[in-house]
Length: 62
Image (cartoon, rainbow, N blue to C red; front, side):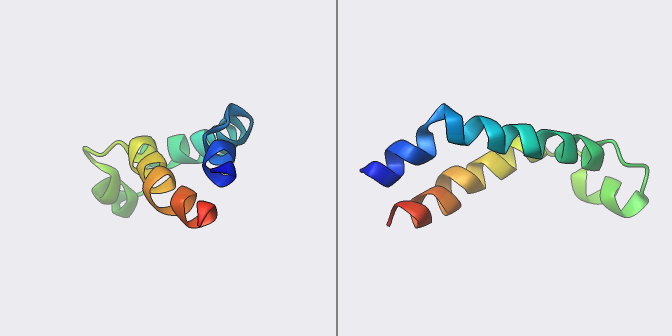
């Protein structure tokens, strides 16, 4: 329970978002053709946060 509460706490999530958002923006707006192929039509932020919620957060809680 304590792990779940911690991982859902805005003081943990917000710094995570603050660090990730600029990097995800750079990837999404890259002129590199390989990166464009990988990111075209995808919402990188949603995918990263889904992984955080479904993968990293439960692993930390257990």
